[in-house]
Length: 155
Image 1 (cartoon, rainbow, N blue to C red):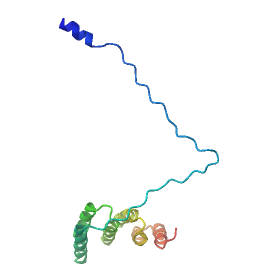
Image 2: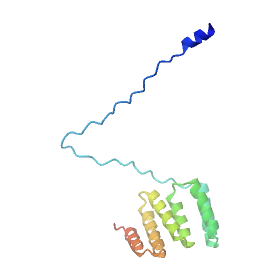
Image 3: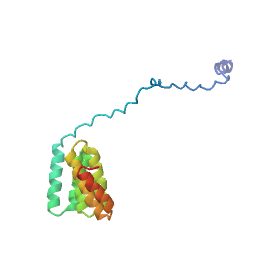
Image 4: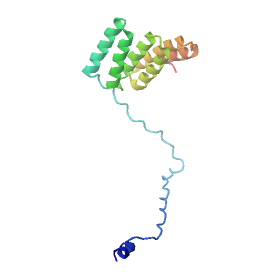
């Protein structure tokens, strides 16, 4: 009897497949309406470095002046991990990598710094100048010349 009751609780009727939701299209703009450019979010100003990051920057500078370039790089990398959106840290690390004769790494780091620099035109120009130096060391004269133009504010 229990088996009969349990058998009555299960259904063997097939479940119909779910129907896809109808596609909703955005309304079309009226004829003759111009297409507005996309709105870009406002760039947040760079946060001031924390006291720990400032201390690490000072420590890296001391190591650099003492000729300990690897130690300085390790210290700056630690600071970058603490404040990854700090464009100045990326720039200083790029400078150090160029000093270590690692020009491709310097280019990559300077490009990251430039990307984070936002409206800080002075830092953007310094990054382009560093990129020009690194490109020249890589034997890319055309790239170096183009970067120098950008450093001078030319397209």
